[in-house]
Image 1 (cartoon, rainbow over the protein chains, first blue to last red):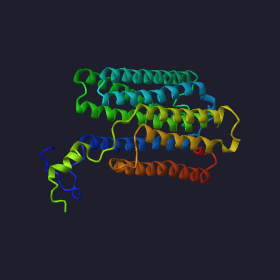
Image 2: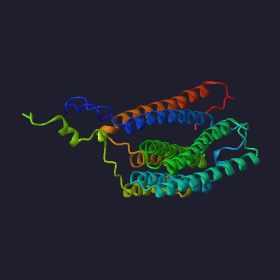
Image 3: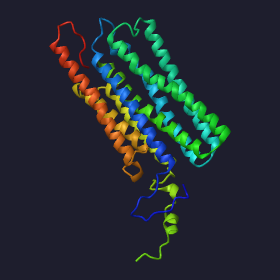
Image 4: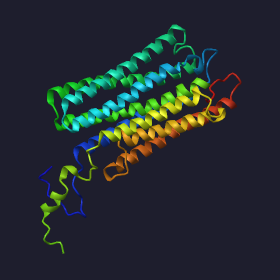
Length: 202
Length: 128
């Protein structure tokens, strides 16, 4: 890249830096992913009235549980951002520590979600019970699967930071992971607002 | 005019790897502010349904408004979506994605609600 002759200011200023290109590509993926979530949101909104005599949103939602889940995910977004700051400053031990905190909060979030799902299934509120429950499990479960994938990715990033250190490509992958994790929290904002908080009064 | 400026001079001003990029030294303080605002908006969202501070019929509008506000806070403070030069492509992508999402959600609800009103009485696919 450095061999490219520098053009005059009015001309093309050379290719954008690689981390900007990588981030842009990852934004494209995230937008596609969010559009998929929008489809599941649409499905849920359309099916929410189809209870087939079974429980409705207000019957199955435990707001205190959701509040703790939200707090976990929101705090993990902060710890993830702090890991990014520490990686930029090349303080890799701190990076690892904040990444570990992010992962642990993600695991607590998942544990609470699995507990919620198993309570519902014990009570007979399975995805097969009604159209509303199919939409609910699909939407919330899809987000949960994304969190699982995020935690696995986080594990591989911690291994890369441990073995490779603050190399440029490790930094790029870390920043892509951070975009992913923050985007997951944005999806969760929609989920807890529409499905849980709004659902608790319907 | 600027005949004395050598090609290398510009490179010194703007190294290639900093090509139009915003300042990368994002402080911890900005993240803490974003976290604080997001926390307040979340708490407000829960307070809307757990207390009776908000007039009943306005509750859904309040929930949606708080959610959109919090998504904006996340985009700006955590995803660093700005109007800066290195971010214009990202911003356009997000704008288009938002458009598609709204089209999918409101289009589906609109069409399916109409279908359910026009269909036989046992049809249950009603909007929220």
